[in-house]
Amino acid sequence: MRFADEPATARAGTQADRKAVPAVAEAVFAAAVADLQAGRDAIGDVRGDITFEDCPAPRRLAPFAVAMAATAHRDGTEVGSGRLVLLYDPDGQDGWTGVFRLVAQVHADVEPEMAADPLLGEVGWSWLTDALDSHAPGYSAPSGTVTRVITEGFGAKEDEPALTGFELRASWCPEQDDLGGSVAAWCDMIVSAAGLPAQPPGTRALPARRSRPSRPAKPSRSPGGRRRR
Image (cartoon, rainbow, N blue to C red; front, side, top):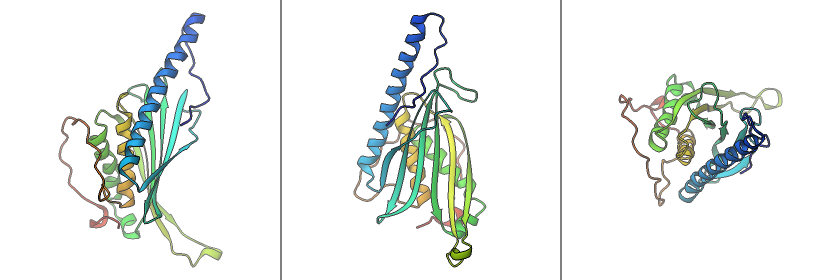
């Protein structure tokens, strides 16, 4: 996984402090990247239907950033994908509750009746929050959107069937020592959107993290009354 090229900006007064602050920040970020990688490796150990790769991280959102991409497969066919970006700013930013922020994107093709269901946004968001509650319960300040995607062909492609998709874009502040749990939650979100089993047969499940204070119970629903297969 690659570090962003932009260095942290030192705001201390002396020359020694200006050198020390970035060194400390780099060490903190390196530890966070290692935690993120450990979470990714844990998923790879139990799910053969998800593959990962490093990808370029945005350089203007925070002094430090790293990103990974994931693709979910069923019988060799891609059925879902996502991108996860870890941002680190030693000074924090407006809207953050700490010095780290995770930005996630998830996409999956869905059946037309599922894309048309008015509950898709609410249920899609609950896939993420339920996964975070299970794997990374110390998260805070979640924010995001759910989009229905309809792709239609015209001209030479007018005979091709329309494609319908689901896309979630979200961000949250993780606990500094629980970044691996956020990777597991992100992967659970991809699995839910792609309609894959929560745990492939013959594999061991990832352990759930410590419980968060209970929330009011939410009804268990799925768009269209069923999950995509």
